[in-house]
Image (cartoon, rainbow, N blue to C red; front, top):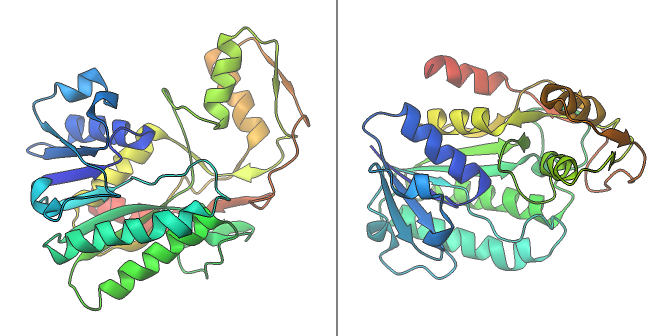
Amino acid sequence: MKIAITGANGFVGRNLIKSIQQNAIDTEIIAVVRNSNSLDTDTKVNPTLKIIQLDIHNPPSDTFEKIGAPDVLIHLAWDGLPNYNSLHHFETELPKQYEFLSSLIRDGLKSLFITGTCFEYGMQSGELDEKMEFNPDNPYGFAKNSLRKQLEYLQREVCFNLTWARLFYIYGDNQTGNSIFPQLKKAVKNGDTTFNMSKGEQLRDYLDIKQVANYIFRLALLEKNIGSINICSGTPISIRRLVEKWIDINSWDIKLNLGYYPYPTYEPLAFWGNNSKLETYMVINP
């Protein structure tokens, strides 16, 4: 089987490649990246990996052939993050994304696996499942949800499998950016005695990146028309408890300065995913 991965040099992409290399026998991986120099050295030298340097915003006309005519495309690439409120997401990113993906599908791609976001659910509180109505409250969630709808309309015209994997919250080693886990690790590394955060009462759904990568490649290997599916733990945990857990597991010497930051306005205080559909497919592909 040939699996192409866009956004292969991102946090999810790098871990996904490692997971496939460790678990999927006889699978050829095609890493589609904007800059091949950003890939891990260990990743680049693996014989099961082929690297294609390509800008999905300005792809060649024969992109499907350029990326090796894969059986499955795992599409992770998305520009403009972590600014969820930027109009870039639907003014620029959305049309470019659809143009790229629809071109591949019309040229022969049979199975598309693409990552969505829990922000598609909007400001709904409590447990979120795939049958609920979607009412995104920020441009990022709106753009992602719109792309899903566009691809579903395209399915009426062209036959292809679509899995829309809605990611919740992810943490793990080598994570960068403004996520709370790398911020905490940075504070510890800098020798800070306290870690500034909100009161930490918000309930969220967190998964280790290794588990997320495992779910993604196992679902992608099925080559089925799964539709929307939550990638989540199904178990809510408070941010405060989560941070305290990380500190305890790693024996870090740092105290929490609770209430330093206000709660974010772009998400409800408490929400988590229902993972029943995910568990069903994991039984199919153990």
